[in-house]
Amino acid sequence: MRINPKQLERAMKQMGMQTKQIEAEEVIIRTAEKDIVISNPNVTLMNAMGQESYQIVGDAEERPRSRFVNEDVKMVMEKTGATEEKARKALEDAGDIATAILSLKN
Image (cartoon, rainbow, N blue to C red):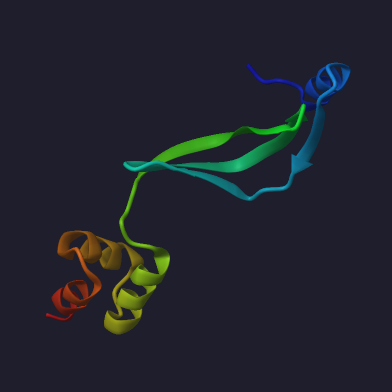
């Protein structure tokens, strides 16, 4: 069920809540096991009695959590000429940057 943002804003204003739209390109919720990536988000910040909360509506996708940050992947790509996908896989398989680079160079 989709909620009309304007109706929600009016109802919250009547209850003494303040809302503010936030322009976001993507929202990522990180857990220990996975990332939940919300693309095309509609983000509303709500403030009620000093407590801030966020309402996020969009297209959600779950992705397995990687131990490696994008900078690690880029380094492996630069050193080996591998694609992003191959660099990530090598990092996950090897467990560290140096071993990943060596495995892709062989």
